[in-house]
Length: 313
Image 1 (cartoon, rainbow, N blue to C red):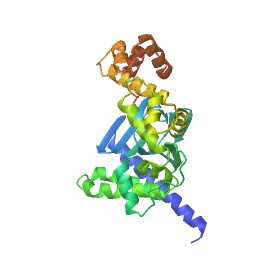
Image 2 (tube, rainbow, N blue to C red):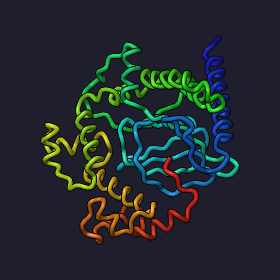
Image 3 (spheres, rainbow, N blue to C red):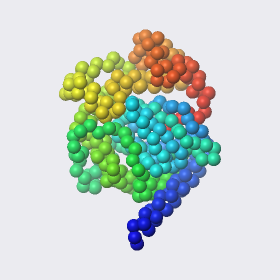
Image 4 (cartoon, rainbow, N blue to C red):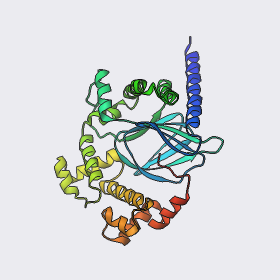
């Protein structure tokens, strides 16, 4: 069999897997929205393009069966579609929106949460060196081509929706295969950082954990950098190299997203929400909220409630 035949057969396998993934996700979610059929697996559907959605994305492997999407992280823009997957290796506040979706061809997606301990276990089982190659900062998000073997594993995982009794046995096995294929693929070094966090990425991961826990407290960069054993300038440099945004921007996005959640849940008005997430000046809160979401707080809450197409997956 010559190379052209091999490439043609692989292309046919890819298309067959895409078609099956579309059919199975569309059947699992007949209407727009989200579904979490098993712990750590998320499916989504949208029949119209969405406005920008602000949320925190945990370490994840993301695949689109149909449609396309963009994710903004600081000044970086990532766009992916059925031919490319997105990998995130740290908790990151992101802005995302569905670009392509229609009633005839809805946006359909799959997301697998990546547990660092599980990734570490697969690395050990596969006999991989636990130390990432090189000690440079590794950006915590990227988009890469989706190959036929990786897509095939995703399809087999989604098939378990029709066989829930088999899921407890087969899901860990297929998830292990997905992690293994990511490790041996183009983003293997990035995934190693999720597992062992070599270089400066370990300090940044600790900083992110602190910022998420204490997002409503004043940000003391000097103290945080000192605790991590990094200079203030080094901390700023490495934090942005890994996350794409500054520590202050990171904290601001966490605060404003939490304030938005409180207001949407009916637990607080704008002034109360501002105070609960760490703002002492309501006008300052309003200005920063508008800079992120485009409109003042209560107008934004009203707009979101009226929009049935917004979802954070």
